[in-house]
Image (cartoon, rainbow, N blue to C red):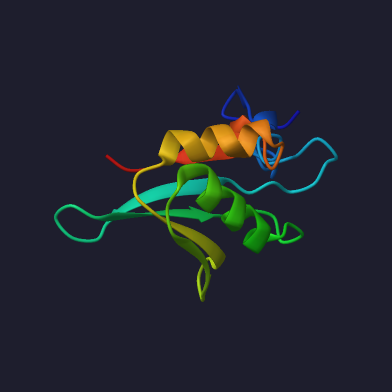
Length: 115
């Protein structure tokens, strides 16, 4: 297309290079679901799940997770993250498996943080 000093600069169009990576199956914008482990004190830790879709009933998901992992938990409103699911204990791999098996979110958008 346009040449500057003998080089083709057609690939410098203003286009979002990562637009395809953030598109869902229906062409919707998809955010990642983050699963984080936060150390509370020396032996205790809290697992947080952020980024779940707004149309999901987080209280029902939290109740099922609590029953499945036999731990306590709550849905907390956060200014930055919105509604966050908190669980006591390290259940990162179990939560990933639960979310994928129950088709709450696909494995590709889950990001596991922590140790």
